[in-house]
Image (cartoon, rainbow, N blue to C red; front, side, top):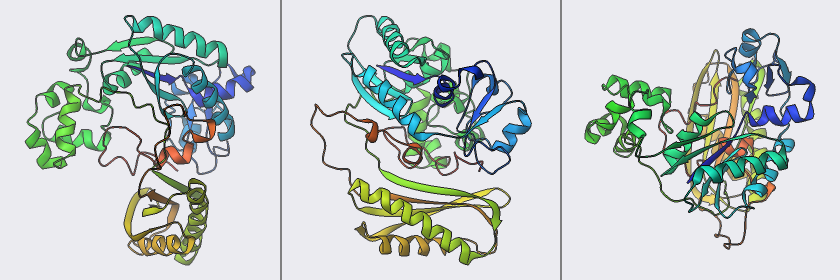
Amino acid sequence: MLHIDMDQFIAAVELLRRPELAGRPVVVGGAGDPTQRSVVATASYEARAFGVHSGMPMKVALRKCPDAVFLPADNAAYDRASAEIQSVLRSFDVVVEVLGWDEAFLGAEVEDPESLARQIQAAVLSETRLHCSIGIGDNTLRAKLATEFAKPAGVFRLTAQNWEAVMFDRSTRELWGIGAKTSRKLAELGYATVRELAGADPAVVAARLGPTIGPWMVQLGRGNGRRTVIGTPWVAKSHSRETTFQQNIEDWQVVRRELAGLVARVHKDVLDDGREVGRVAVKVRFAPFFTSTRSAKLKQPTAELAALETAVLEVLERFDHERAVRLLGVRAEFTDPPEPPTAQQHPTAQQQPTAQQQSGSDGHQPPQRDEAEHHDAGA
C-alpha cells in the first residue's frame, strides 16, 4: 500500500495564489495576525527552518521568524485543492482511503510500487501544481512512516525487511500514534527507543498504559499495523468547534454564554450531518496555558439544540470556576455511522474532512492515549 502526503499543503496552496512569496518563510493561521491569539496551521519549509511548526502559537512563530509572511487560513481554498487531488488519485486503479485534506492511503496490487508512486506524483503535479511525498509499506503504519523519509517530493519504502534497520534506533516518539506524553511514559518504563519497545513485555506496558493501549504500543514498536485500505468515503465521527479569546475571561457567566454560542455552531453541523449525538465534550484552556477536557454520555441520543446545550453546560460545571479562561471548545460525538454507501460512491469536496472535522474525528488511525485532547495546544 501507498501513503500520499501533500508537501506543506496549506502553504503550497497559498503560494500558488501568491507566487511572489516563493522562497520566503510563510506562516498560515488564524486571521493572519501574529499579534493575536491563534495557532499556526502550517508553515512553509523556509519558515520551518527557523523552528516554526503547526500548532505553535502565532506569537511564538513571530518571535522565531520575524521576517515571515503571515497569512490568514482559507478553508474553502483548501477544500477545493483537496477535491482536485482526490480526483487525480481516483483516476488510478487503486483503492483510496481519505485521511484528511492532504493525505490518503492507496491500495494497489502492482509489481513495481515505486513506479506507480512516481506516476501518481507526476499526475498530481500536472493537474494541481502541487508536490506530494509517497511512502510505500506492507501495512498502514509503515506506509505512513515511510512518507516522512520521502519528504519532500520523494518516494520511500518501509517494510518488514528494513524495519529494524530504519526504525530500531529511533525514539518511540517517531512512531505514528505515540505522542510526547506517551513517549515519556514509555521511557520511564525503560522503553525509549523503538528497539526497546519492540522487545517489551506487553503485560508490563499494559500495567502502565492500560490493557488496550499498552499492548498496542508494543505492536507499533514491532511495526505491525492494518494491512488493508478501506475505500469507503470518509465519515465524521464527531463535530467540534472552538474559539480562542484575545483577552482571558474571568466571568463564568460570560464563559457559559460563549459556550452556548459554540454549541449552536456545532448543532448546525450536526443537523447538516443528519445524525444524532451520543456524547458531548468540553475543552477549556485556562490561563496561563493549561488545557483540560471533560465529556459525558447523553441519557439518550439527540440532535436537539436545547438538549445539547443543557448537556454541555452540565459538563462545564465540572471545571474549576476560579481560573481565567483563554479558550473554549465543544465536541459532539455521533452514536453510529450512517448507512454505508455503495461501492461506486466516492467522497466529494463536501465530504472531505475540514479543519474542524479533522480535529473532532479519529478516522482509522491507531488509538492514542493522552495526546488526543492536547495536540492542538497553542492558542
